[in-house]
Each structure stands twice: as structure tokens, then as C-alpha cells.
Picture 1 (tube, helix red, strand yellow):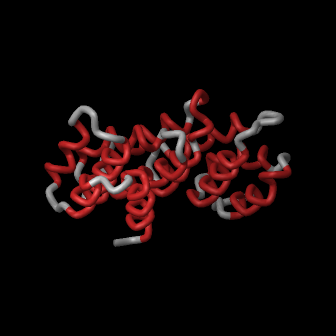
Picture 2 (cartoon, one colour):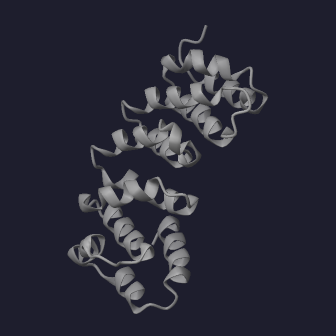
Picture 3 (spheres, helix red, strand yellow):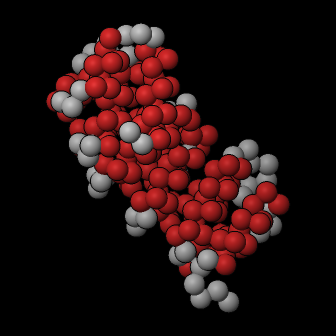
Length: 191
């Protein structure tokens, strides 16, 4: 069991509060049993999260919708677990969904993990989505500096020249300036 799986199971063990269903879901190797949890009415959120995470890590695309919903959850730990599983799911819809979540201004408070997932996926949608999200974060008094910083760092990691203008704008923002310098240095062909 890797660190992400261990963290998820420990966190959700507390939520499950001794439910025998928890132990069954953590122990089973039956992917159909896990998938059934995602469609059965009345299942608690912790059970759906365990099932979606385990299916996602196993590469079972039946977890996709549930994981995208968790990626957009208000609880950062649920978002982080969903992003981890989505990165391993290898579903071609993942990058598009992450880009939609990262650029949704109504849900920008929850955009940190979609931004990080886009960087990890290195999909064609990543650079345009990060540029759009960062441009919106460069407004005066924007409260989402962590999202902006993730965009700056991600654009540096991706090293795409299309990011140069928005990263240059980020230099004027004290909270982003140092990261923007490093990001710009990683883009090939810098003038």
C-alpha cells in the first residue's frame, strides 16, 4: 500500500466509525463489488470515496464520474485523493474534466488539485487551462494565491513558451514573483 492509499484508508476509517462495510471495501479485490457501491442508493460518502479511489487506482473507468465529483469537493483531502486516483486511471476524459474544473470561476476555491492534476497529466489541455486560470488570478486582491502559485509552478514544469507572457505578468505580484522567475527560467528559448 502506497502513502496515498494509506492516508485515504486512515482518514476514512475514522469517518466510517467502525462500520463493517469499511473493512469489506478496503479488503475486497472484487472490482464489481466496488463499482456497485458507486451506483447503490444510500451509500455514505466515505464508502463511495473508498470504492472510487480503489477502482481508479486499478484503472477501472467506472470510477471516472465519482472521482471527478470528488476532485471538485470542498474537502481538500478528498480532492487530493481523487486527483491521485484520476492520474492513475488513464481515462482520456480526465484532462478535459480537470481543465473545466480549473477554469471554472464559480469553483476557483477548489481549483488547486485540478491544476496540479493537469500538470501531472501533461495533456494538451494543461497549458491553456493553466494560463487562463493564472490570468484570472492576477487581478488585484485576488484571494486565491495558492491556485495562482500552483499555476505558475505548473507552467514552469510544463515549459511551454505560450506561458511566457502570463508568467511575465506574474512577476509584478510579490507573492508570485520568485516562482515566476524560476518558471520563466525553465521555458526554452527565453529571450
